[in-house]
Image (tube, rainbow, N blue to C red; front, side):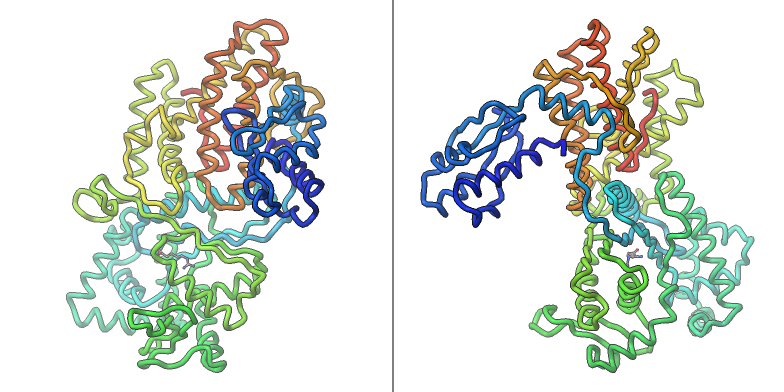
Length: 587
Ligand code: ARG
């Protein structure tokens, strides 16, 4: 294990057990970097009460038993009872060189089958910034989970079924598949939806036909199904165009829309009713899972079959969780979905637990996605007050990035500038979604997300491009820079990084935390931790580059620093790619 805190942890545990007995083994020491030492251990304060000694004495007893062999020479007790450790330079060098040789940094975690429900937009509707965020956060989580060895099953739970499809099908039949109106499904889906809605509201005749169409759809009428699938097909083109621009890893094979559960809904209802888990209330079949009450302490219903016989969002989600557990054999299921749906999911899971479809061994998590706000602090809308068109938003990000690149790098070929603008513009939007807690709201602000300084995507991309340019200069000077083995790649046997200057030391220690950080993200499902880590890495690199000459150094020092540069580059690129962000060669 490379990471300093993780190396120290077991040794502290062992010392606690030695000093106070095995029953204290489970006292979790808090170990973190501090400004006074490489790591600071906070264990004595919590233990003091239990063992009836002053904290500093407890710390002294731990230190007396602490095995520092090969790690550092001395442990220092500070303040109310902290233990400060400063590692031997040799320990850091050894770990860093092993890392440069491609040795995996962290212990393996037991591999799980993780189903991740993300993106999940709706057919014949615009994907909005909320869907953008669930797509971006979900895609980062699947990459992180796969990178630590889990088997990930992507599920794009698109909304492709339900009563609105009656009017959508009728409208498509009227305008014809090759009409400009139908083309809106791919260019401006909301406009198509609104047109259908307008007809529905305006004419009783159209409304009646739409209602009948829902019945034909649900009874599997082939002609109706054929029109329906053309509708879905158009929407798939639209989704895929967005996914293509974003560079997300969702493919058609990951589509598992609401419609795919339709054949099971009647049986779901029957079973729940038969077993007394759901009952008829005001004509609708409902479950009343324990612990969900309304204003007057009345139990809240989860509607499973509406009074008109139709099924709803809750019904499909019950069939969905059963499928994920029974057929996909999930150990863990993540729903990367907007925060307002939290109660819906909790009620669905509670009902599924009652029905025995969701055993305790399967962990379900709602990765709650916060709203994206406009500058007025309200849900992001266009000037006209209509939902923002996602493609237009992404185009604007790329255009703005293009203006910056054109101004800053007129020396680059036009084709390269175009490619870089795309990487930077899209990277900026994605990073803005990822760098704040996924459940917090944030204000969508192009100027801020595209800034070349601060905790932004472009800042990190720029840091990487700068290191690439340093390495290119070294290569041009005839240097054969020993590039680090790409993360997880085949190993090489030697690396010669020396850690001498304080800035080198700080950078090295941070590099050693890379794997632990990625594992932490896999555990907590919080990509913003990786963003913070990478931001700090870029800052520590800048400090190192300011204080330690690289290209102007000579001999082994130059070699060592170049290797350090290239390992930083490798982790920046690897980390950004786990966020789904590309790193341009030049910027
Ligand atoms: N289509 C839904 C929406 O746009 C999200 C679906 C989330 N997944 C689920 N299993 N309910 O809000």
